[in-house]
Image (cartoon, rainbow, N blue to C red; front, side, top):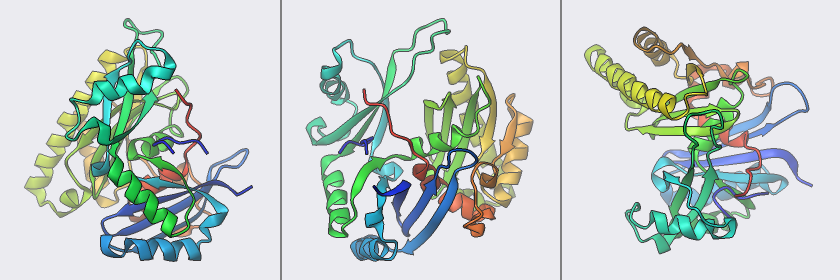
Length: 316
């Protein structure tokens, strides 16, 4: 099973995210037309010492043997690195990428599980793109996590990452022929992504959590807003230089509640790009889970909902 592994059970994915305070779960179904439908979501409080018991409990209560299951890693459990595509035959690509990463990881490359994700070429740009994303995680972590799921009798088909979960949501927001930037915050930090035609082209992490924004006083909040604006400007300028033929339509701020309103106003006043705030009910059907109409719930479940939106990835 690879980090972007490929998969008659229930349609759609049951995404499972193990966070510091517990396990987030979401399942969506994509109908032939209309919005994707959120069939269920849940949270199981648990710290690392009782993670196995919590997984066993949710597996039984949700009858997870009936679903295709994916597991969403947290930001500290993997590296996502942009590297130039080696000029090698396709069957030698992963070995060549492993060689490229040997000086980029803080552990031995032989101890890493590695997968790759293509960045499509900008055919209309002045310079042909020749990059891809490499994802690396410690073998020990992957093996331990797989063992936990096997112990709970959960058939884990895919291990996923937040950048791809956010990409899945961004793909539902793109105007035809335009790129979209998405900014989210959670307990792990901030994440900026830019997508075009449903593909991930840029990803940047911010060492700033949603709790820091919520707990800051007025002067601290202004400093944090300035910091976010600077990082966004740098990231969006970089995207414009690299992919000039892909016009950026807007920056969308993911659900944050009251904190999001103030941040949107500040960003709108200080960025040249239009800024909007996302309400997930505009792109997802919450008729079966009305609790998700609340902005606070949307912020907490944002990533696991994005992971549940996944499609099969194209193999390289």
